[in-house]
Image (cartoon, rainbow over all chains, first blue to last red; front, side, top):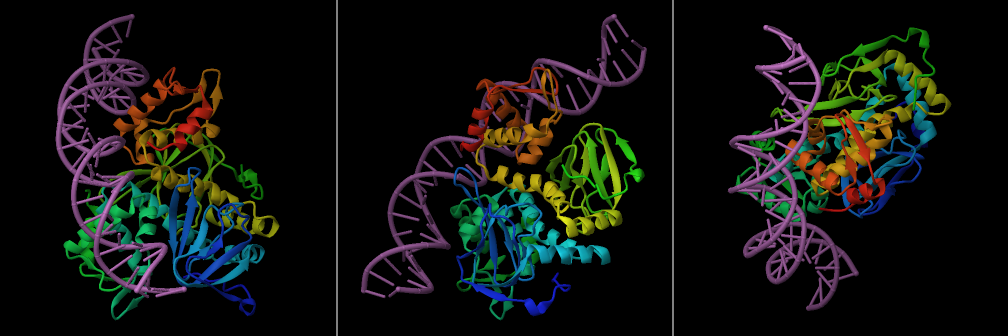
Length: 208
Length: 208
DNA sequence: CGGCCCATTGACAGGCATCAAGTCCGGTGG
DNA sequence: CCACCGGACTTGATGCCTGTCAATGGGCCG
């Protein structure tokens, strides 16, 4: 987990935003870097035809909205209630410059933001809805909080569908399939239990 | 086009590589940044099952292999004969630090590398093979060299297929469709003529 | 209790992957 | 110069998967 350790933390201004609200909008100038403290955020891009696409999911520790383009390429919407810290682009660049001189660690924060976008491409190429969904769950597990009932999994199926380029119906059927195979379970709302992680990853690698 | 203007150009060491050869391999440590001078490069990622996916195409002026991850996430293969300059990661980071203090322009070079990867996700979500292919061609035009016969288009259909998550057969049929619609033509090997760019972009936006 | 959003299930049609041939073209070697 | 060869492209027939449309169920919140 990368943090802005070279930035004076006394200026930290932890903010809260409710589920469904937007941190920044696609097309706006990149003026701030958002450091996610708790909750889950989705990146959303709307194509010209009005088609909604979820480009990435972000988790605590991630930094979003890094100024590698002039404007944000996606909107950042809170999936759950979210806490975050907002840094000015200028201060973030200074921190990056300093980090580059030392070890380049902060550069990796960019990789962390780009990674889910990159992996989305790999997921979508995978043939077979079941394989895509399995791959998505398997790769998301490490980011999810655990409690006695299993993983906290507050991501709506609509978002999964738009992330994997599927319809909600197909996602639902794929999840049922994985349940029937005894790989996963949804004991309660927003709770996920994985019974056999190995086989889950096998399904993710298999076609059809 | 971003260049390493703050780096001493006297160390520039222009290298040449033949079509089909590899600049760097997926999984290798990021030790060098490759500044493309001429030719076309494809980013290739092989999934565990051996499925080949083209993650991006790169063109003259692009910088590839930026050290935002520890290891390269894709192999860089020359589509055509290619000339490039190789910079050490350390020197590149110094240049980035300097650029961050001034204007942050070099940060945008990262955006340039990530952009085709990002756009790939948008293309693939698009329903309909014809729309994907049309969108790919339309967005690639500005990068292609022109001569009296049209655009130089040396990208094999297999690569287009692996970039758009389609099969070569489907790409071929989609290209035929665009030809039948009178939007494009392939007068000679590796040569592309666009008759109606507006309608091409319309087709790219339409479903099915 | 009522309304809304999300999840679920079913029937159906269409598009793409798949398999299988056949064609074109450039390069190589005689 | 020509014949050969191999890889990329082309075209056709078929089956399956997933999108679409429609309707119902269920949980949360007002």
